[in-house]
Image 1 (tube, one colour):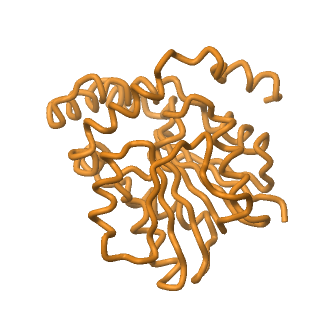
Image 2: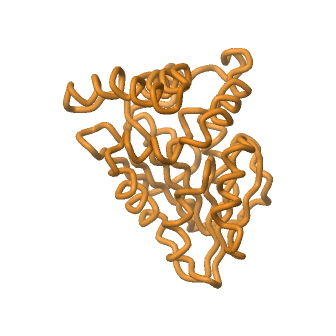
Length: 245
């Protein structure tokens, strides 16, 4: 796929839905208390395996520094911490203060975790700060995907890796598409008592980039050695790319 064809499937940031970022922020603020429990239920527990695999793609070592963009309640940090060890550091960033409040409670006694409220489109870190950066189930929520990837690329060191883990719009098994489009919103709406939020999460998956489009987006952000694969019968997408040394 060419750069021109990729631009055809990406929304124009200047024409993004008015107030989308604010609406998404409010949505995650509302569902923060039930988010982890519902993730585990909706994914049937498989999200733990996917996150572990995604973190492995960062190729981190003990003592290094990692960034989790759109960290939410900080669940992914539990997979990064054992890798970087006590001498390493893990930073989480999210735009939802309510989500971060749960992360802060989780890591209040973990000195090598830092949590920041901020925007994935304007990361508040200097260039070449981290040994690796990851975004998990968050990229489809930003209003400018290429910019978010460029920001991740900017803040990692030369030779470092960046990773995306998210749902995919075209699962191989038709039943999976039905599940995410119909069953997941019902479960989420019933337990979180927020039908609108889980209808959005389903809709955002259906309109998200394909794994191949994401591979190209990683390359356009400046990454080399880009890999792209699917998990769970094509319902989950995983990309990794390396910043040139």
